[in-house]
Length: 315
Image (cartoon, rainbow, N blue to C red; front, side):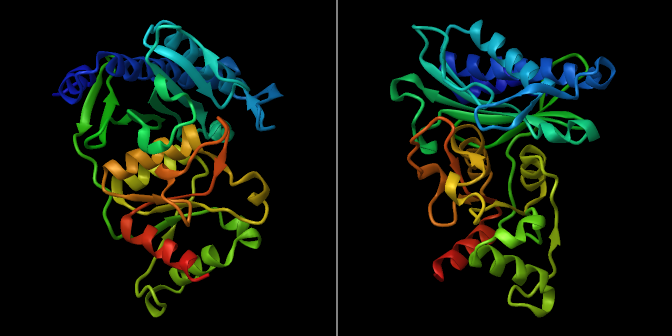
């Protein structure tokens, strides 16, 4: 079976890029080990501090960030680290060619109930600085910590999935992930309906109407509240994920961060045949203005994303 190192050697001649991905994979394997025993070690509670976004940090947010930082410090190819948990970008190596942007532990609010969480990352060329469009990404991926620990990664070609073995090896289990163009599932936090705009409300109501509605088929709503878990489900069987702009998040530009959440997930979904949008613009074409910039995120099955865009086009 193909392992991660073999796949990387076949995907790219850029040794530094391969090493960056291997560093994030090694960090993911270490985080997976920490998560397995976190309840025993009493590490699932709050750390007693907030991140730059004003969100309460869990102890494991801080631990995961430190693990990623340590692995990237040991890699001379990495010039800059941008992390959700750090106010400013961190300069690591003056000779490094690459930048890594990461959410070290996405979905950490679910840690207390043992729901799938993950590590998301994006790799950029240092020459362009951290504020580059998602289209400029050299690679992106995430590690999903669930019943199995999965690494989902894409350079330029297909989106591939690896599973962490008991021996600590990343073994390829899906060579070319495909998001079905059509789907009967959507993921959105319906508790926020009172804040939604007309496009989001219209799309969801069409889905809920089922066979008798304009969509002409029955839909199921799925919502984990961990972006990695929701996107991983979509990569495996289709669907659409929505965290749209609404009246409460409009002043911030959205809820999810562009550099280390929206861009890498859009990159992976596109590599699997899906699409992404803010509602009015391809996510990968958004021009970043800040390392912690927020944007609306809609991504997944191409036909469903198009339906959402059509709703936004109405007005």
